[in-house]
Length: 624
Image (tube, rainbow, N blue to C red):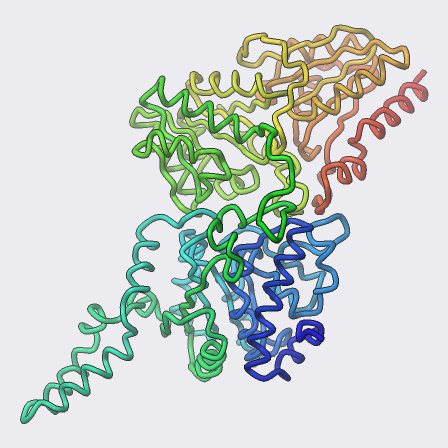
């Protein structure tokens, strides 16, 4: 029987001997590779943190003691150790366990997390609450070195250090976030990895001085008096010490015995403690060690070879970005690209290869990315900021104050707009129309297919003002791919002219709406099919034409309270006239959208072709 089968809670872990724990670590890695090869998920980061998760649960008393996992894509070993091993076949699936930490899943999941760099603020809040409530449990936050590039992490570090609260910050240092880490902090961490530990250096120097005849004792006293000066030369973690932490490390994150020992020892240390742990992303699975980026988040793959099983031949919208930006860069030397730690995920890796001096990865710092772009635009460049829709939410203030007020020509490429199905609530890109549409001077466009997307990127590159191009994660559709009507600011495109019923689609919903159009035609109706193109500025000419229809339906992959359909409704209000019946199809604004396949979620929220057809036919029958 595997030791893995005996561990269903952290207390079971504590019953094993050290040799048995080392075997368990190997079993956990084997389990992760086999399970994720079937479900997809985050593999590299989880393989690298197995021993650290084991050591934390061995030395702490979860859930009484609180362990906060930053981001959550390093939480799979934690989930295995806290009784969810048998549910891993449902990972990231509809009604299954989440790929991130979810407090409604287990009492061991202390706080829901999906976006990076929040763990230190959460842990500090919990530590202050514990102290005010006169409680005594321990608090540990685990953060990756990539997440330390975020300003939020350093805001928390600044406050934790001066608070003197008892808490542990564990830095899981694998030199990677999703892509390779960048910036001065990454360079500093690299220097730490190559320096000897301060405590050993200090001990060796003192030993040497004591052996010097006559002056040895005086020199040792001088060393103690000059400790502050000396540590700037010798201490690896001086940055963290100066912020108020007691720094330990770096230590080997795969030496389980050593990790357990140091965690047990530092529990006696008062105040904030910083433990620097070195791990290897993809540890124990050769394909993931060789290509940690590929296996960071991966779909179904062959566990023996590491080869992807899914169809890799389909062209995605991200692929289109990759090719189009290189062409634009060749034409216009003023174009620069910016990403926040996602050069491959956003399609900018190819641009970086061709124009390295015009590519900028700012790390996990979306707010800085936007204001950085604003400065570039003000000085005469044409910045393209490529960030996932859900991550751009962090830069809301910067978009308004630093870009829109001055009408600066910054292009926002919003990858993963709409459903990002398996990642669940924290990653669904269904709010960007809502949070951008009320910003003065902002333009919002979205393509119906690959060809139109290429044209929209070119249009954005020529536009003299803030503009956001939103597009999905999926393959680039070729629905109505033969139409080549030029992109004109604020103008929609009528694909099929009909009567009585108007179907108005914004963006990637066009695939489903085309199927709906065909189904209505088969039932004897002759609807008009419109590709909106612009959510802002809204085509008011289109709005006036829609008044002549009995039934008007809008379609979007956004929440409905303030999305595209609401813009159309506001347009009707502006001209004080409404069609006989108007309905918006999209996602409800009153709830967060859970994980599941795109098809499952479309069906649940009435956005599948069949559900929309059923709904529309019932409306027409009821109103006749």
